Length: 189
Image 1 (cartoon, rainbow, N blue to C red):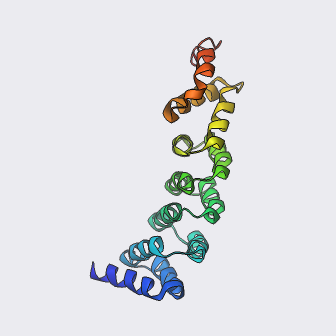
Image 2 (cartoon, rainbow, N blue to C red; image 1 turned 90 degrees about the vertical axis):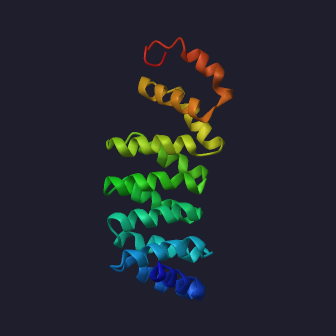
Image 3 (cartoon, helix red, strand yellow; image 1 turned 60 degrees about the vertical axis):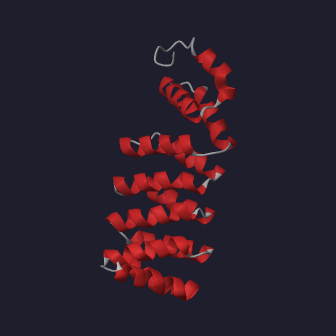
């Protein structure tokens, strides 16, 4: 606890000039220092911190990568979206799922397209996380994409849309849901 507090305090006390110490904590062998650096990254303001995290991310593996992905999401800076989308598309399943779950934390309309794409990922865990993330993404852009999915030619897409409409409590879609009640496909009905 003392070491973690010291790392965090040293980074925070230096402010923007503490980014090299932040990087060293994240990339070093000491997980306590990495966790303290991640905590400090949550507290440090400024886009430079997000840029530093995004720059360090490709060199990390396993738990460290998941940790930094979580921090990027919680920081909520729009500049993290390309990095998170890249991580969501390739790599270890745990890392991909973490990135997919971090994307909606940015609360950006631009998050809709990659999440829609990832809902069709061959890795089941990634596809499920993308669906859950889309369900939790606020805003009319997500609503519009989900409503569009309800008009898909694929029955599985229509079923997914119905589930998402229910989870998001999209009351304005009630007429479309009533219409889906007479769909030719039994799973949609």
